[in-house]
Length: 131
Image (cartoon, rainbow, N blue to C red; front, side, top):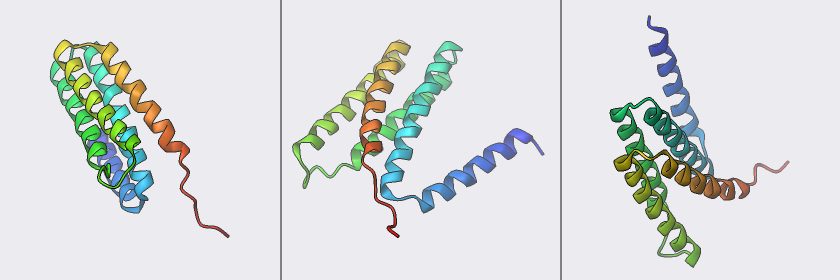
């Protein structure tokens, strides 16, 4: 058996188990982590001059941020969520620009923005069971 194939399958099963047991709060954290991972991987692809890989990874990051954006409840929410919606749109546009221009600085910019949002989300502690 191919060890890399086995490792990928193990990771896939582990990720599926995590998502099936995760709270909505944790799922958002996982999406943000995935977005940051894809941005970092895209930057690595740029450094290796892997154009197809760069495009695929940036596309995945855009999809993840789009998913975060779709999860916002803009109809019953406060103004700050509208600002977050605008920030997500900005991040997706900048990622597209990074892809077109092969610009790792833009990837850094978007990663910093997403990390800031994630830090705020992480600070919102979901209370666990009380004993």
